[in-house]
Image (cartoon, rainbow, N blue to C red):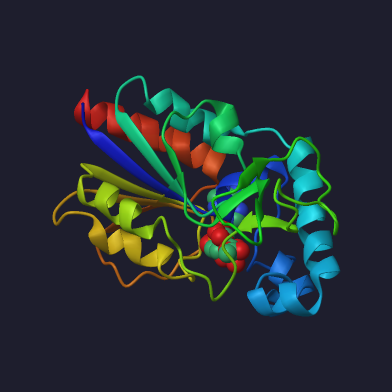
Length: 229
Ligand code: OAD
């Protein structure tokens, strides 16, 4: 089976009602990223950080996977599909995708501030000051903040190196190291980019499908089936 590696970003979940970051009306227009998504923010104003992620989590509990997520599940009938996502939502998993690697953490999880290996699934949207791990330390969102290491990047790069086809969906390719993963795609393999807007990439091997994720993934399925089945 051919291996399709898919790198997804916020645009993947836009049609599920989850806001993107850098577009007009995006989250980073309303919030200063360093005041809600950095270790300094957590030190200076943990209430604000918790409120920011609680709002995101509340929306996520109300959201459903969209046609794009579902299309990637359909692709698994014909291909070995490995998803690498910058998204902290669980919409790929809820759609039914079998292999999902999260680069930037997971919104529905919290972890101990004392021991990063103590990670808990949240069954409710609200995480509060005073919510603690089993050892009594405050819990924080299980999110990779700006300035923190992206521990999954090494595994992600290894997956990219084994791709037969590489697909990028709904990311502005602004944030590294995630954006650099495209360059781990082996020489000569097809690389598709699905996005309704222009995305700058230094990689000149991209075939652009200028559509939203829902329609774009359907077009991709047709192209790949024609090419490989
Ligand atoms: P951005 O907000 O930077 O980019 C979103 C991309 O999605 C843009 O290129 C849009 O054109 C595109 N888009 C919008 N609607 C779409 C749709 N319906 N279908 C497909 N694409 C659509 O989001 P990311 O690139 O994911 O990190 O941002 C990367 C990281 O920056 C995030 O993981 C987050 C953020 O700060 C952390 O919080 C650590």
